[in-house]
Structures are given as C-alpha cells and as structure tokens.
Length: 302
Figure 1: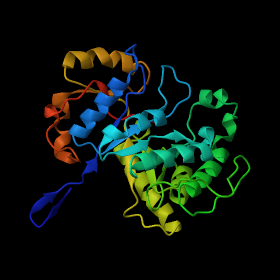
Figure 2: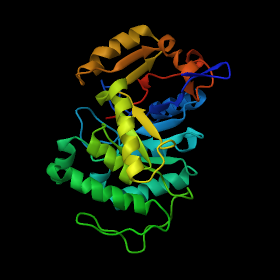
Figure 3: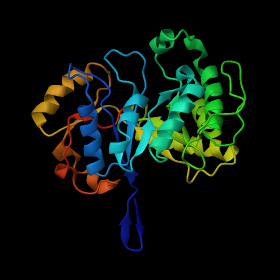
C-alpha cells in the first residue's frame, strides 16, 4: 500500500475459483455442480477457473483437464488454468496436445501450470519411479514449453520423445500457451521457475507472507541471472481449501469433514466473511453477498 498523489494505492490481485473436482463427503459428481460453480464465478467477476490433477487420491477426484474442457462455453472471458498438471506422468506430448486443443476451443484463454506432483501413489499408478520425478519433470517441462510455442524446436530426451514435425494444430495464442511452473519456494525450485517458466505458481499451504516475500526476492535474483525482467513476471498463490456457502450452519458442518484430511486445515467462510474480498480483489464487480455462490471450494492446490 502506498500514497500516490493524495490517493491511497493498494496492491490488488485477481481471484480464481477451483472447480469442485473432489467428492469430499458423498455429494457425488454432476455437470450441473460444475456448471453452477462456473456460472457463479463468471457472474461475480472472477478472473480464472482452475483444476488440479491427481490420478489417485483419498477421495474420488474428477479429471481436471476434462472438467475444464466441459466448461469452456460457460466460462466467458475467464482464464482456464491448471493448478497444476502432472507433466511427468501425463507426458509432454499428450499434455501439449490437450492444452493446445483447450486453447483453441476457448479462444486463447489457457495458462498451463505444471509440476511433478508430490504423490507417490500417482507415480506407482503408471509405473514411473517416484525417485525420477525431478529429472523427468525438468525434461518434460522443456519439451512441453517447446511444443506449446508455435515454430519452436522440440528435442527428444532421455525419458520423452519429441515429434519431428511438432504438433498440429498449434495453440490459438500467438505466442503459444504460457507455461507456469509450480514451486513451494525452494532455491532449486525458483531457479527452475526462472529458467523454464513464464510464471510462478506458489502454494499458500506451504508458505507465510514473510516466506513468500523472501521467495519473491530470491526469484528476482534468479530471473536476473536468466536475463528476464522480474517486474512483470507473473505469479499466483494457490490457497488451501476454502468452502463458500450461504449459511454459517453449512460452513460449520463442512469444516470437520475437510479439516481431517489436511493437518493445517482449510478455510471455511460464509458469504458475509467474503465481502471484504470485494474491496481488494480486482475482477470482483460487486459485493460477493450479491452473488449466487454454490457450496464449492474457492481455490485449491498444492
């Protein structure tokens, strides 16, 4: 916050909403549930719709890219974001093909956030050694970045092959689909972000305001080493689970179900608690109490 010409200037951020991909307590899955979430986000002026990625989980989990594709038409001008996609397991070629198709169908609104994932079960499910996740991810990210940029050369590596002629059709975005790298903020992770990424996806589950500020400073140094401008390098902070509901009783009922899954617990908010967001989050067109918000996670990730 600062004072500019007698006016108070506040930093603002865009808010995104995570699709309800997880069956926490037997709610079940339906297109209607996902569609209502996207409709509410669009009506409230949110900037992005996002989806996470797991093959196996302690609760049933819908496939994220498929869910994003299902809501392309309803999502208006919102960005379609993965938070994040498992590049090491999905494979750079199939993942690039899916991202390109989604970008074309959405009119160029895709941001590809990727990471290796931290679940050993996901790796075991596809027969990939968990110990190879970082080597595989570095190679997958480099190849994926090339495949998402029209005309860029893509070279095969140790773990993944590159099609000699690239992929067709190309993404809708003229400069290709931006590739963001997920990192909890270690020096090695931020070096990877600066080297391979067009943006940084951080995890609120694994940081504090002080740690995040220190990581941003470190990222700036790594970007400088890569001769990339740090001032306009984008970042996003993916929160833990936030459950939005009209009724405090529903929030209190949902909290025990959610908190048992994560030691740090989710945030649970009723609509009045969220009104303060409207003053600080760019893209919220009017107070959130006026929005029709179904009970669903606001933004989730790791």
